[in-house]
Image (cartoon, rainbow, N blue to C red; front, side):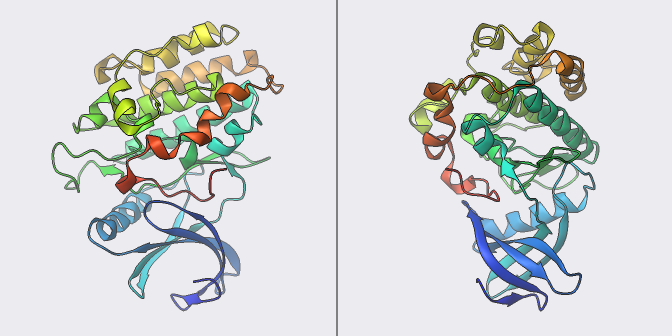
Length: 304
């Protein structure tokens, strides 16, 4: 598609990423004269319906911490989603490279709590929170933007999946989601806490070498974050651990997690940690093994 004009308006300039649903390009909006991102998904079976679902979810949301949808269209058998182009790197890439200090991770977590609170208040549950779906921007407010609502659930709409179907990314799923049960806001709290746990500790307690082994690990009690990072504020560590409770009704609210993060920011280190290569490499090396191929979330930049 590079070099082509789509929807009579957007000139495709270069490919910037790909995933289970399609390809993401950087493009130029000739009408408003601005750069945009164009996600192209071949409309076959379930994929076409999920494009519409992502557009419906994004259309409900208007928040600086969520990537903005500009337009949706269809051309040459591809569904096209045009969004704002967010410059920066994914949280997965930055964490993998050890480029974030503890305070920066906390600030990103606080931004994501606010973005998810906005989504939940409008009946949208993301269901695929993970480091690859968070874009981090340098020298901006907020610092993090949540993207890819391709498997989102809309509270007042008919579900796309039948009871028992599993959607999302296995290594970051809540236990109820992995079992094919209804996933409410508590599932997003679980996945966000797991993402922060991984960024602060360097390891995902559920990820294993194969999808089957990862599935068996979901729901097991993770090692306490305080054991891995005793230097983090105790209230923060305890809240993150509580958000990983197997039962949804035992988890703190999104507001409680956000408050714990905000209250701890001044106590978090603002310098880069010592390299933890033996665990940081796990962000990229096992990414493919930890996903469900049919529902691999599409992100804006390829992982290393």
